[in-house]
Each structure stands twice: as structure tokens, then as C-alpha cells.
Image (cartoon, one colour):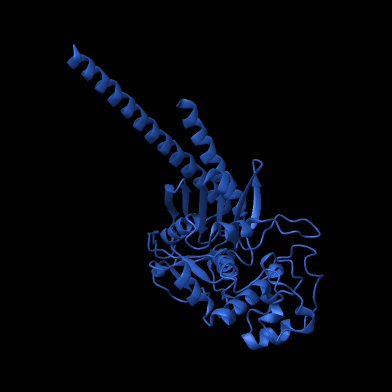
Length: 361
């Protein structure tokens, strides 16, 4: 009788485990199918050449996949070695580097930038580090001179007028992170790219490279495409980001490299929790904008998420309340699109599928 009971118990347990495993597989398959369909739809709508995307939930990568092509002319597919050009999503890593200096008490948000940079125009000297991080400096935008050498660009931008008093409003421009890059180098005595690789990509440095010249041939880098001027056709981009703007743009990364970086960020290996809270804190603009001390703030279903996008091509967002991160990387589109909207849609798909799983359980 005891043997029968034990056999019955084991049978019930095995049945329950198999049922749970089957439900988990069905949920994963359903999530994959929904995301695949969405990526297919959005790729067709905007003429996206290729996509690499990953979803990390509760410390586990629940979705990672490549779609489309890394190069059209040679019919090259993506691989785990493929580098994506990040554009302004580079600022994610730049801002973390600055907050690490604050954490180490080598820098303060309230410091006037003239403490570190002694060649600034008089009108720039009372601008603070926090104004650069929050894009509330009112500075003119150096991107209008990014085809010039550093010395020429600097001489031009230093003659331009301040647009508004610091802290008044959010006004995105590349000058802010150009100056943050210079401050970091002044404090650390190292080039920005070198510092980022050493501190944020230790033990996986090969997963990121800094090169802003899109025409350079770099092994495993996806070709970037665009349609400019608008003619309805895709062309290879020949844009160049100068080295002096690598704090604002110019970084290239593999999807696996980004996933590993996200793991380290989530586990407070790059900066501590206090520093992360500082990044996410809403900056007190006179004219409200959803932006913190280096990262954008996006509200989705009454919950706050944080991240950055670049070139209407790449983006990264974390959802603290869901313990989830989404990485969305492309190598060009025929039509410009909002990366934030694409990430929002993927987040909703994940939430919907996980809710269905919870209801079944």
C-alpha cells in the first residue's frame, strides 16, 4: 500500500512539473512569436535594414534575436560578433562614467565647469555639471561644426551666444557631452574611450569599439544605411563623428556586449545604487521636461522607465519596477522612427504575455 502511495505521489509531482515546464515553453514560444511578428511589421513599415534586440527580465535574457541583414550588398547576416553603431545611445555610458566620478568624490553635480576647464568663454563659466548632464545648460550646439577640426570647432562655438539661462529648460545638444568628456579626461588623465573600456567593459573590451567614421571598414561592423536626401532609396551612410565628440556619440557595440554591460549595471558593479538613483532623478527644470541627470525618463502605463536613444536607430531602456531591460539596435531605416515607441511596444508585449502566464498559474 505504501509503495502504491509513493508511486502515486511521484506520478502527480512529475505530471505537475511537466505541466509547468510545458506552460513555460508555451509562454516563451508565444512571446517569441509576438515579438517576431511585431519586428516584421515595424521593419516593413519603416524599411528597417536589420535589428538586434534583447529583453532581460529578472536577470535572465528571455529574448535575444537578430533580424534582417548586417550588409545588403554582400547579403551578410548578423552574428554575435556584429557591431552596431550606437549614435547618441553612447551617452548612456558617458553619463555612468560621470556619475562614477561623483561617487568617488572627484566631481560634484553643483560644480561650476570652469573649475575643470580654464579656457571657457566668460558666459559659460557659471554653468554646472548638472546642467550638462540634464541638457539644461543653454549652450549653443557644437554639432553644427562637427565637420571642422577640434580647434576650428572650438573657436566657432566659443563665439556663439548662450541660448538661455542654465536650468531654464531641456534643450538637447552635443556640446554638453563634449564638455563632460573633457572634464573626465582632465580628472582622469585618460581619453574618454580608453576610460570607458577600462572601467565599464573590463574583461569584455572586445565587445565595444570607438570609431565614428561610417566609411571606415571595421571587421564585423554592420553597415549603416539611410535615405538622405529623401529619395525613397537606401544608401550606405558616409557620416563622420569626430573623435572630440566620442563622449556624445561614436561608440559601437555587440548585442552580447550590451547584455553583459546591462548585467553589470543591474548588479551595481559599475556604479552603486545611490548613483543610479541620482541618474534617474527628475531634474528640476523651470519648464518641465521628462529628463534626469543624464538619462531620459519615459512613463509607460503610469510606471517610470529610464534610458536613451540615438540617431533614430538605437535605444536602451530599463524598467526598474519590472526588473526588466530592453535593448533595441538597428543599422538604418528608410523612414525615421521613434525608438522609444518601438521599445514601449515590446515592453507591452512582454507584460501581456507574462500576465497570461500568471493567469494560467
